[in-house]
Length: 196
Image 1 (cartoon, rainbow, N blue to C red):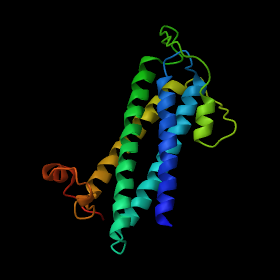
Image 2: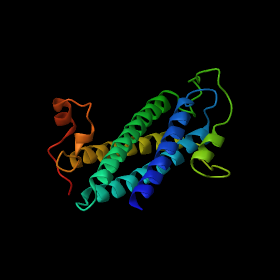
Image 3: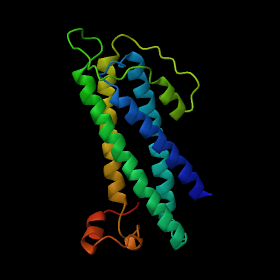
Image 4: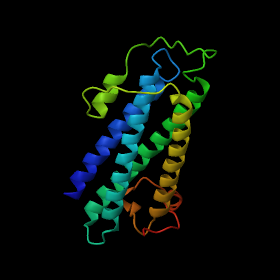
């Protein structure tokens, strides 16, 4: 039961993270709008909720000393995929912050990039978040508030990743099934921290 739940949560996180990446690419382009910025915000929040749920579930399962070696190997594999999703999310959040600062919506002196792409992005976000119709009521000062909030969320994701790194140790994670790793690489993957 735990393995399937983890896979489902991870699949959802992967889809929402990919959606966020797709949306970030359009910031500063001809499709940029307050609706896009609000879609980014909602997608980012959904990704963070899924990340916390994934982290909690996987951490609990990896702490369990009674699971079989095969199950442990599968949970470790899922942990690596989860960590990768988190890294992608953090990178894309930073990219959204930088581009959002360079191309604020409410400053008429800044021209958006004409990328050759145009059209709506709400269909992609709606599919990833399983929403039928995404409508937003954004105030005119969304840029400043959203960018500050994004900056805080980037810090939170960074802290979560540091915490995750501290929890993944050689004692808890058995890297023997990664046969292609050299011994030095295995040591580099391990941290001094331990699962609490």
